[in-house]
Length: 476
Image 1 (tube, rainbow, N blue to C red):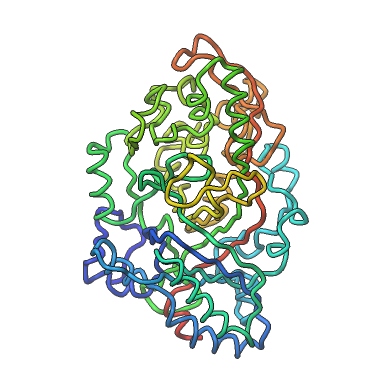
Image 2: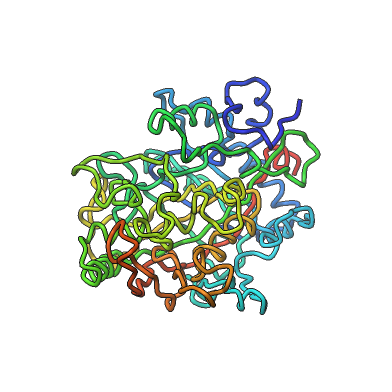
């Protein structure tokens, strides 16, 4: 019986024989992060005739691609699951292969990320694309990109050896227009990002084992159930007639992080509000560096400890006096507080984040890699996320929530009846949208103060891709 995409996570057991075909046909890293510490991302431009490129993909790429079946079979077994390889095509890539893209439901995918056209309606409602112009992107991303290959392993030498073998096989068929190197940052063995905040706590979960693991950390799920249906990230691969052959849309964005600038702005915010810098940073992010949600506490856990608390919502903070409305984790996941939208409607906007940092950490951020405190050293996040529809999920979050100064407090009146919320201070791309910060944690009667906390994160380029199914690749 074909797998139904409406199936909820509590009924998805990777060991279930009825899911065997689906998992063998699906690429890894979509339903569950691969968890490897080192990654290389290679951006390709096809330069040979379509038939030659197709033959190369079938011969050189298909055998390397890691399936979800293999990922789940080796996950948590105490053994090295080996290198994880992913292969993704852009709309231009499909066209270069001589294939019709009209069957892909995502219009944004077909246009590509470089299409930044904004209609009058979007501008009036502050829903337009606030990304930097393509001309300011890094040169590699300004070029036409046809495909992306990702290689990841816990040993850097293994990744580099596989990159070398791949490059040798691709010489006459494709041109590598860009290369990115990712490395997981950890502090006390827990994953963090360059600003030093514990990362990866709140993710949609798609399998029963992952739900059970989450329940061990958040037993009740009374306020927030992280489970999701397969339809959140999977769609039928439109270019194969095979059943149980699914794919997923991938958003790739290189985000540069200016750590020194972020820290200065946190210090300035703390001084302006008269609060501790740790609390000021938590106001911006939505969690303290150890993961403690600021809506639940005005301080983090004890030094060296981490909080994986995720069973919470913002129902007891309707005024945004504990967790500001514009805080990153609240902007990107309002947890039931979006006007005229149900909780389930909100949850259908979620994305499966699979990013990895790049560049060395500064002192204090991580302890698993050598530090480099030079402000000129490139560092940031190679942001990847999977979803069933780019405009309904990633673009909606980025434009309607993150970069919309009216969301959520005055979204219905476009700021006419209420003061603006401001954009996301962490990843918002509009430098002119100030935020309104609580003067005292948990005391809405004390009012708010308007301060422009400009983002220290800058988009350096990216592209939209699709993760094709194994049957599609085999039929090329």
